[in-house]
Length: 363
Ligand code: NAD
Image 1 (cartoon, rainbow, N blue to C red):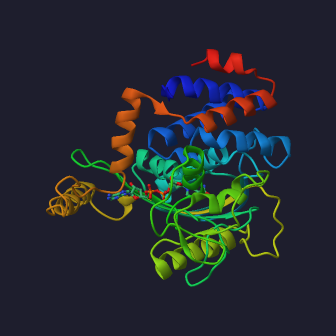
Image 2 (image 1 turned 45 degrees about the horizontal axis):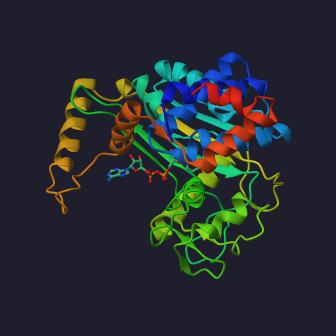
């Protein structure tokens, strides 16, 4: 079914408030999730809500947390997210880092022990809105591994995302590279399972390390209660050893330098999701002349886009374009929500005492 963004936000807000979040926190989290759906990243949108409800019930996610400053020294800011909603503590930590970066020109901000940060591009967008450049390296812990190292045959780390953000100009939209270091995020396998679709080549391997098109090889991670899951496989890293190397640096930067720790098995896992984020914020004003920077951004992006497309139906894009196109289309036509995801959202609401009828009335 197609649901308008505003209706979806109302539903998410009501469920989050029932889960104990303040109105402000519910607004921030709902806005983040619906924005991820608008951008086309359903894997990090409202479909995460049932998981959050489960985590609330298990006391592995705590509403209404604020990032706690652990250390600060010059341009360094180190926060602890106290297992709060990542979307909320992440936004607050970024706000403080952006404020400092206006004076210092450079900030290294780390945020550890935050519950799922969601779509990392949101933090890139936050810095772009402030006219800043940012780089984010994130690892995932408290969760079993999902991605196999290059040449390996079982999962040893997670989908460790990286985001790089550069402000736009009058003629060029911001450049926002926001990606998992696996070929696909786990949520994309969830969406394929829920829609009963197969996956393209090279995205997952089966339990013997062999290439597979069956998203079901990931079902055991997502739906362990189901009895008919095939044996566990793993997601493949992006770009073979290069993506594997980047994923490892998410562990080293995001996990080690934040103090949050890596996914190595000596660190306790609760079957939840903790994201640790390493962020570098740069105020470009302190480095270059802004009109010149804008000119160079416009020229280099236009130079790329003018490359004759190999397939006339598929012109060259700039990172961030697919999300912008999707947002335009979904704002006009609504956000598609598949039956399984909708059922899970209703069930999540019900667990917190919000009846299906009440939720359905909000559409
Ligand atoms: P993706 O593969 O759809 O896109 C990755 C990047 O490539 C985007 O910046 C996109 O704009 C760009 N892109 C796509 N097609 C392009 C083209 N033709 N030309 C130029 N650029 C193009 O994204 P993904 O890797 O599946 O990640 C999805 C989301 O999952 C991201 O928002 C990420 O932050 C999130 N994620 C979060 C976590 C977490 O633990 N919180 C973990 C993994 C992923």
